[in-house]
Image (cartoon, rainbow, N blue to C red; front, side):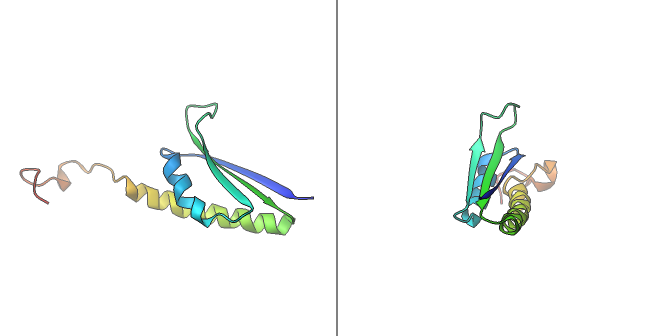
Length: 94
């Protein structure tokens, strides 16, 4: 008997999050983007299947840590506008 978990999280850019965490997936995991979610938010969906409860728990724990890192990194991939602080005098110089 195998144990299964499905983790669904919503994000502003779910494709970016899914691409960020997919390389860490093991053979027992599958990460997809559910753009048909019932709400207006697209979701990252990861399904995990393991033979033992302890194996499932360990894999879910690792996934959640990887997800937290991916979210943190994604926040820097889309920097927010800081207003005129980051603008140059003529807005063309770097």
